[in-house]
Length: 210
Image 1 (cartoon, one colour):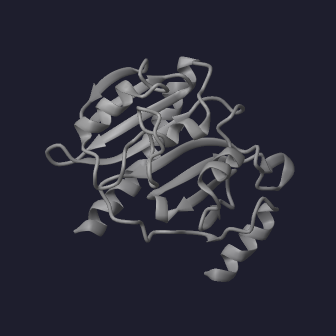
Image 2 (cartoon, one colour; image 1 turned 120 degrees about the vertical axis):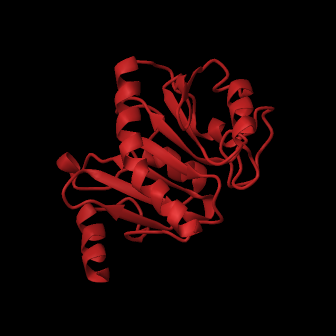
Image 3 (tube, one colour; image 1 turned 45 degrees about the vertical axis):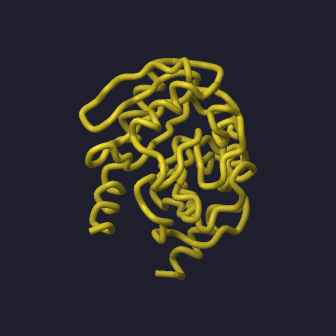
C-alpha cells in the first residue's frame, strides 16, 4: 500500500513541477533567500535532518506545515492559495506546493525555484545537504536528478550540459520534491555520485548498470 501511494506521488511530481515552474517564471519575482535558510525552523533554531522550514517527515501535519510557512522569516510574506489537493505559496523567488493526504496528513512538498541563475544551484544544494547518494542524468534532455533518500528528497537541476557537457555546481535547481508522509526513501536511480564531472561519465555508468 505504501509503495502504491509513493508511486502515485512520483508519477504526479513531474507534471506538478512543470506547471509550478511555469507559474513562478511568469510571476517574475526576485530576491530568493539562501539555501541554508531553508534548513532551519521558524524560530531560527537548527532543525535535525531531514527538515525543510521546520517540516519533518512523519511528524509534521498539513496544518502545522502551513503554520510554519506562514511564520518562517523566509516565507512569512508568501501569498497562499488553496487548491484542490493542498495549498500553494508564492513569493521571494520560490513557489511552495503542499499536497494533502487523508485528514490532516501532509504527503509531500515541492519547492520550485525561479530563474536560471542565483543562489539556488547544484553547488548550493551539495553544500547544504552533502553529497547525494546517486545521480540520474537524462540522455535526451539537459535534466539531472540528485537523490537524497536519507533526507527523503530528490532535486531536479537544469544543466548547462548543452554547452559544457558537465554536471556543474552552477547548474540551476528547478525544484526539490520532499516526501513527508513516507519512511526513509529506498527509491534511488541512476548511478553513484562521482562529483561534478562530465555528463558522459555518468551516462556511461548508467548504461553499464542496466
